[in-house]
Image (cartoon, rainbow, N blue to C red):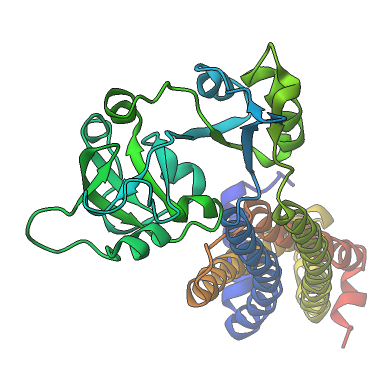
Length: 395
């Protein structure tokens, strides 16, 4: 007998499912639940893992501070080009800097010229906020254009001491005296946990500090962010990079304890993810196999009738293989969609970044197909080997 056309095989497989709609729906539902469970137990821990990683990253797990090392009463300044040199390191993603301009800030020129309220005046680069995860409480930060003019941004503690917790909504900007020059306050920072020294600082634009306060351009602190995987390597090369002539006089902070916590959390979540996904896939596979085996065994009389009408064993095998593929595809696809939707919904409810591993979705569909095919082929082959009379007499 000539081999069946693929279209005929498809229609024959669909007919087998349509004639037993309730059983097909329940079988596909069982597959879908197993696959959805696998996607969910992979997606929800992955979303939680990403949320933990984001929170730990906000603690500065990839932030390094570079400062000149004091030698007795003298501190050798960092080179003028040290910031640009640090930015050239491959794994480095962000670099910024501040510098002490050794000036006194006063709210009024009538105050003692030596009373700076314990505040530090720092020259700041415009990209400082991104490097230290800072944010504004009021007003705006230094801009490329504004940093050339006499404007300042106050740290949280500095603003409280000077009486400017928040800037007025209307009217002229407050004025501060720095180095016998008046500067306008354009913004107030929120507290910066990664750089607490900024809380007690008054930040002046890098260019304005050079033009108005005699700043020589040598940075005091360089903030370096890099890819976490290369953090130790970047830390090792930073001294020689920012100060090639005197690397021994450069101090680099050690990696944050948050990095160790993050790596521990990554390891724990990875083990949990693999364990849950493996158990769920096993349970789903057993459910698919059980469904397909029962499906084929219940239809042995149908197999016997087709064999009696002249259908060869190969067509019997192909018929049930096609049916198992269709059933598994329907269940696997529905389960994957259901699992993704449940993961996205739960992550949104928890306020986590939604993460659905691609491998989990792909494994859900391909796993359903593979397990369904394997489970459907064996009983079909076994039934196909029966003689028509034996199959028809099966109860």
